Image (tube, rainbow, N blue to C red; front, side):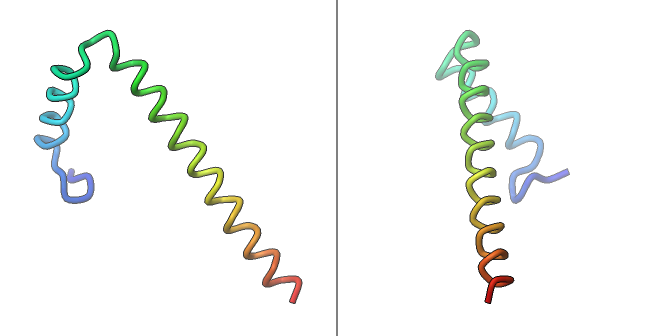
Length: 59
């Protein structure tokens, strides 16, 4: 099942490269940081969308 234009093989290759570059002890920390960043981004975009919808309803 492809993830965008990257297949399973591509994801495995990216994971192996990250493992080589950062080492096994840093990967969980990087994963948590990525998850927090993604969560904050989703929250910010959700807030923008809700603000636009409220502005349209107020007109």
